[in-house]
Length: 173
Image (cartoon, rainbow, N blue to C red; front, side, top):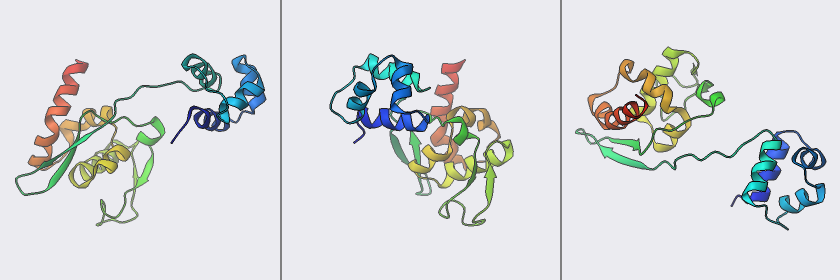
């Protein structure tokens, strides 16, 4: 289980900061920060937020994705989330090699998600063949909505995802 202390330590280390430097930036003592990181004390929400901000991070509240498996007319299962997933920018535009269960016809092929046509191909593959884990790993909801009309998908897959895409598009408009 991730504790507030573990989170603070990971963020501090990811930012390349010593306890002393993060404490200085956040206006607290090194010993207090150490106590938070080791679980001897628990920071208030406001204090944790201040420490994260001083390390260059912020809290984000994201919807918890749940998936409903929809069975197509041909008996295939299509995983559809309750909300569109969002990826960090580096992940949304990364270069990826899809796992064998998704890309058995071209194993090891690299797809540049920053390239619109490569991204469309990956999205088609993942929406057609992927599990909920694949969707969360490779699909960015905003980029999916942008590509939706161009994607070549089986009718059953398109029908399963269409209500979520339409709902999201209506909320944005």
